[in-house]
Length: 149
Image 1 (tube, rainbow, N blue to C red):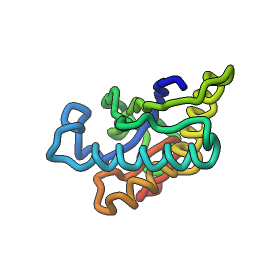
Image 2 (image 1 turned 45 degrees about the vertical axis):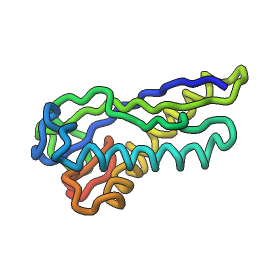
Image 3 (image 1 turned 90 degrees about the horizontal axis):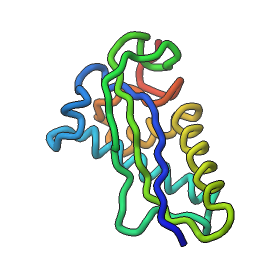
Image 4 (image 1 turned 120 degrees about the vertical axis):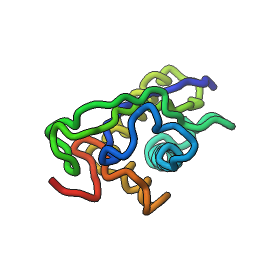
């Protein structure tokens, strides 16, 4: 089997309550909420699509690789264009069963995760179920959120 990482990116909003520079600090639960929700989403994606061929690498967790402050794009379901958003790059450690299709499995996982985040709103739903008092007001493009614009 081969250990590999996939990265996926998405936009989210905490309604301006946190900047990228203090998002990962321990006094905020936002980072913990996001990682727990990502883990849940990845596990569900694996169970649904790639059972037996891919697992989260033992002892490893998804992590926020890069986070930047951006202006919210126009197509979000939960935030006004131009308001404060965060752009995330999440790294997910996977172990893929050997085979010629290892790169295919990575591509499939990445596209399914993006679909879950952006079209289904599943990552936001998972964040809310992890912490119904989270500072997140929405995740994904168009995504899902508590506000509607």
